[in-house]
Image 1 (cartoon, one colour):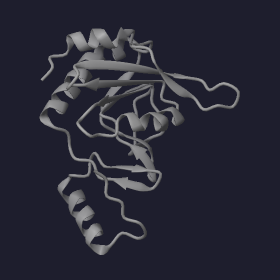
Image 2: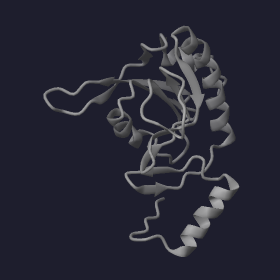
Image 3: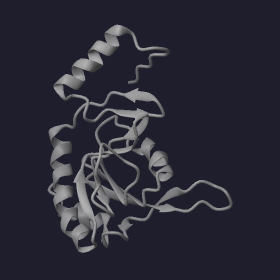
Image 4: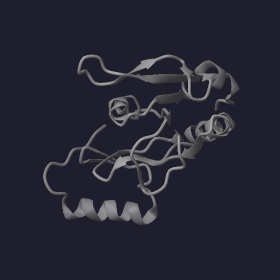
Amino acid sequence: MATVVFGPRPPELETWLGRRRELGQDRCDEVWEGDYHVVPGPSAEHAFVDSQLAHLLWPRAEQAGLSVTTAFNLGEPDDYRVPDGGVHRNRPSGVFVATTAMVVEVVSPGDETLAKLTFYAGRGVDEVLIADPALRTVRIWQLQPGLLGQKSRYEETGHSDLLEVTGAELAAELRWP
């Protein structure tokens, strides 16, 4: 379900968004090309898979000279997404991270995970890992350069060159909810 408000935000909406900020309920909210997306926090099942993935990816990233984070703001103030995690070539700092080596997403019912792929490609994210607790799968896409002026796009390969692991291997190591 989507709610779109055209024009300036009404005072009641500003008050509600301010209250969400005060309570820390806006940590997963995103801005898509200036459009504010209110995103609920993750379910317990989502968080369970997310924390396990961070644990599984950490040693592989460390061995490759990379660093792992939990959720972060990828993009800039008026256009950013909040992936569940990331694998970075350098330790990120600041509120917004321009790009990263890999984003990690855990699917929740009705979320916008797949709609983020174009944004991630535009930011030059090398790999995207998506875990789906309902299907008990881990899928991995790799960025492919665009040909003859076309934009870069993702191809599902099922493996990470960065971390030398397959989605099937990670899926087998997860304790699914």
